[in-house]
Length: 227
Ligand code: SAH
Ligand code: DHB
Ligand code: MG
Image (tube, rainbow, N blue to C red):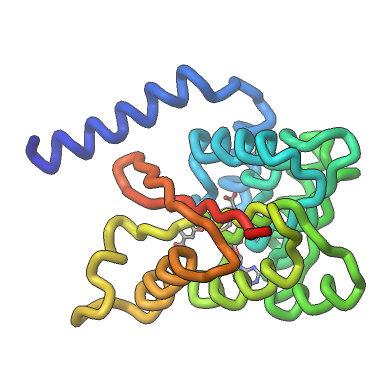
């Protein structure tokens, strides 16, 4: 198939899966509209990836979740909706503007009592969470600035228990990770390629990356902390 046809096919399959499996809950549309109204970048997970996060959260039986990178809380809402009534999410966001949009979206979704948005650089907030003894968490979603992913993974491991699930977004970068170590590969690309090697080889983890595509190809890392 020509590349153009493949692109169309990937969009069509994404739409097919969304129509089949993603619940038509207006809360998600409203959250995206609020983000657009406030000029937030469209870098949230797709509806299909949201449904995947929802499924993984349910399957894991998670009750305590830590997310790094809130944006407008679109992914947060998917995860929070999969929790039991006593479930809790702490989500970390650098931008106070993004955090305000996120809090409004969580309020509208009826999830304010389950989700706490903490403003600051992730690598500054994570040590405080550890010091305060707020761990261990059952599930992590790492989706903030890519160069700090290795640092976020270190903290996730410190704040985990055997069996915790660590999910990491954007690990395939439209195939750029294939060109790591070659001329033109960016620093972020080198760091994510190294991150993927760590997921594959770190003795504390068992992992896979699920490729996800809607025109642009990317991947979700799924790791379990070993017993
Ligand atoms: N998880 C969201 C998307 C997150 S986009 C979703 O799928 O709906 C990445 C977010 O990380 C942005 O809002 C950005 O402001 C935030 N971010 C960037 N650098 C950060 C840092 N050092 N600490 C915490 N958040 C950061
Ligand atoms: C970007 C960040 C993301 O988390 C994402 O899913 C897509 C793009 C970005 O910073 O460009
Ligand atoms: Mg992402």
